[in-house]
Length: 141
Image 1: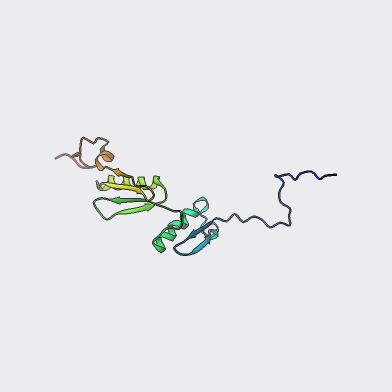
Image 2: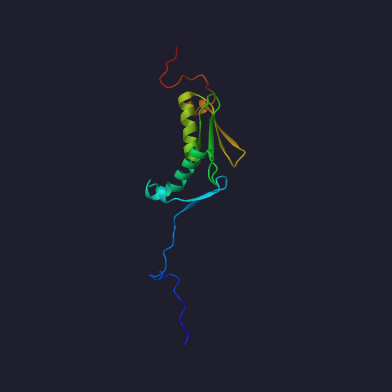
């Protein structure tokens, strides 16, 4: 008599070791690998554990771990700039900086040769034909 096939949805037997689902990050430049237990357990980073580790790694080493390429935002008129792991916060920073300073800002992804320009006049007024509009709170003289 043959035995029936095992059920693929059946939970593992109690004597088997549980699967370790802790995410890991590698960095060839540092020649290291890290488990993200600290970010998950101590920092309560949850879904942002990888992002938190990548940003911390860059702050302390000057480079990102393997497979991480940031969105780079640079002001064209002052030394301000930032690097982000997602486009949305990069774009928000660029638009906010342009709005408050009236500086042109460029956004570029490290893997991409294309560049996005945030034009202060268009962003501030919505009208590219009116570059001499007063800033918010300024009166015409």
